[in-house]
Image (cartoon, rainbow, N blue to C red; front, side, top):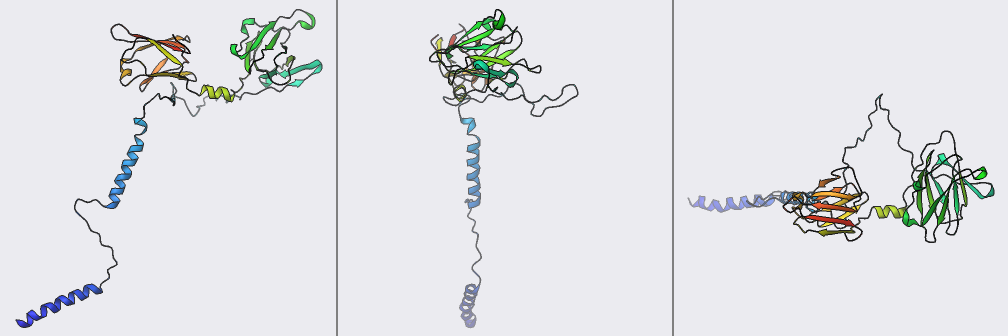
Length: 322
């Protein structure tokens, strides 16, 4: 018995010496109840971040914000791939706008080929420039359309006989005239002319024609200033009249669309919108997007009429007080 008790410490020492000689470089995984692994914690954090980013757009006020415009979805679906059939051939893409080149002729006459595209007529302030039409071609004076604030005067000169038999359009720029576009239709064709108050004046202008010429001319591309103005939200609207709970928070227009944003829940009142100007044949030229009415017109005058008792009415005016 004494020998057995003496051997127990020796067995314990042998076991410890065996552990000291074993390979201890293998990693040991320790699982603690209630504590997730670092990999699982990292994955859950990434999932929370992705969920936050995915719902970000849903938590931004839409569709109207003070400086950011709403992207408008086309009312009708657009086919991205044309379907060719025997009855409906594939239409060619429209030719981009092209400016006709000016050719100097005798006696100071400047020529443009009608079929090449629109003409750019240079006429400096203080000059009188005459745009000659084809002999036998007539036009009504009210058909001469140019921007009223551009500073250009256009007068129709009716021909008589001889060398003056052809009709003409007299162009007179004011001292503060700016570049503009003159459009008019005659008894034979339609003209598009860029009026430019800079550069040497073209005092006498005429066109050459060919049998295959089109009946219309392409529109010139908009200037960078016009594009910037068109793409800038215009908040110059005023509201007068009643003040119901659904009274719009803000109204603005951008391009050919007008946006009317209602307060939270106000869109549920569904007030009736009557567009007074510009005139339209549509009884409801707008659609509901989020908390707003989107009108497919550059509204200048309109009414919002409530459905509740008393029919509260709000007058909307652009550019000044109603």
